[in-house]
Length: 359
Ligand SMILES: C[S@@+](CC[C@H](N)C(=O)[O-])C[C@H]1O[C@@H](n2cnc3c(N)ncnc32)[C@H](O)[C@@H]1O
Image: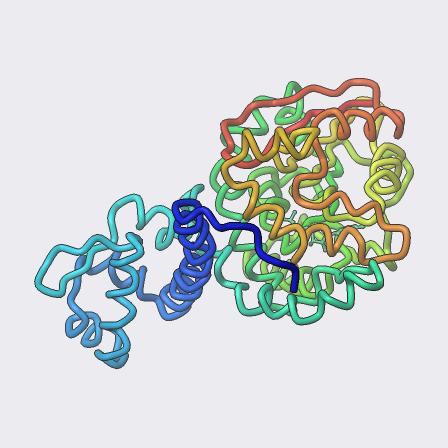
């Protein structure tokens, strides 16, 4: 052990607060996971503020456990404490944690916590070998959680807000075209479009078996005959210029070979077709990301646990990770693949940048 440099007592206090604040955040995240999983936020949203006794009566769960959970959530500021043992979920809390279809709903991100944190057990090996783990390493719950995390915005705003901002696309979709969503996950975006545009045919491509199983179940439940899902590893995107519209949402930075996939998209798209991309609003340097993005620490952590790991899950993977695909790089990859027009579209999304790319 090297001799310790003198410790500044004030900075020491601040540092301890920082480190144990992070542990506090982990505990609060675990409590959010439980509240979401057991329907406690939904109960507080639907039936209003409650004491632990009232919440126990509503849910059939044990009062003592609920009391400790409520107290934790009050202490963390997730619930408002009204006095006399009564806790409330604010309207903002209802939007973020209880209302599944609100575009800002984020409860889904907590639903894979056990799997994501569990992955950390396997990562010392990745730090040695360099090889990461694909999305399927997080099991079926991982696919469900990605879907819950990303779907609310796309279900609520893709058709009414985003598509009308892309010149010509709504008219093409209404007339009837072939559409592909590459990296479709559980198909939320694709199925939302398939429902809105019955004259067009929709094809989702992904390599995650768990996501594809969910996608097919979602398709069946929605009763949509104009959508189909494909395992890219055995049934790849046809490179014959058939698609009028191709989308890739929150997935290029997760891919081992985004350049190869973009070249394939270029070959699959019609001369008058459009490629619509959503990816994280990343900036070109670490310094810029840390200065401009208040969620940078969370995102770099997510990258190690999921995104970069996925992007390094094959030998030679590019390994971009959560904050790796900034606009200049997206433009360069598109141009290298033969696209000639690239424009950014500001849709007011808190996390994502959007690009409209044309041959
Ligand atoms: C963060 S998820 C996003 C899924 C979906 N777009 C959504 O919005 O829910 C990233 C997805 O990219 C998929 N993926 C990674 N590499 C891929 C590849 N080479 N081809 C197709 N999909 C890929 C993963 O399996 C995962 O489902």
